[in-house]
Image (cartoon, rainbow, N blue to C red; front, side):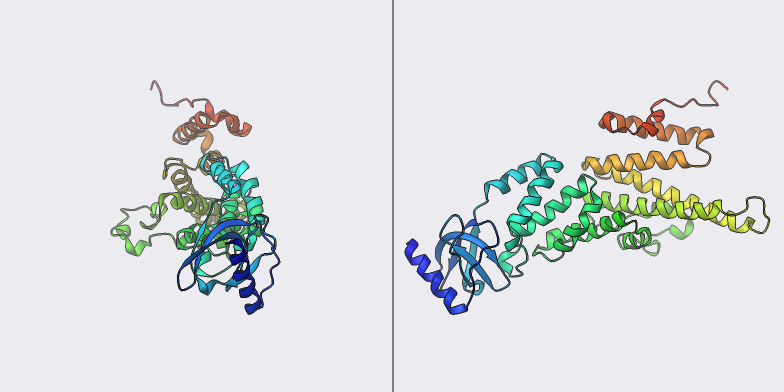
Length: 348
């Protein structure tokens, strides 16, 4: 049987003029092919848009290539290293997953970019996706730039595309491109014109919802990215405001306009940060903690925070929640929020 397979693949490789250099770790698979739909076991080493390369040896040596058009089905045997990587993912061990999927991305890169339908969602392509997700979930946003270019090229199906589009938002965040990020997030919003009553002030501007068809895990990311970009753009306006003469009548109107705009933007950012750590019940822990920290920092930056009991109470509540989830990660500059604020009107 092995001799027949070897001869069969060798003949096809000669006929198609395909070289047999292996560039990927072999994966055991069974190929169903030919008019009689016969099964041929072997070890796949790589694939391009038209051809797949298979060896009869476990080490992938002497791989022969043949046309994907002649194949009806490919049944893959999941490699042990891939099972281990997925176990890390399922345990939420994203640090370990980063290393495991990074290695898999390199080992199985020969399968990743084939655009043939039979090669959709191959281990090589999925490795790039999960590697990026592990980087995102561990906050290594700047490291996502190179694999982001790869994930756009690999052959992944429709179920992965919404998250792949969101990877662009995280790349904007890594580069500090706040305006492009903010504009990108607008595409996920339900527009004012689509909501009854907005013109009658029944829905506040900072409470515009996200489109209903978006799943909650993506909603949490969108809320955070929209909050972060809005927060940073408000800081830019605040810097402009600080440069204006606070005692000049000539700048009074401009200062008032900027102050109002900054207030609305920060209110919107706070709403979105809250969405980010509550909308999916904080299932993505790293994202929830980042959103909580950003909320606390933003509240503390508010001009009247030191005298506003409502703001202090809100920040204290978030601090207690954060500390209950991950006390070791509470930033030193926010630890004072763990102390309950005193109501100035108590006892009056």
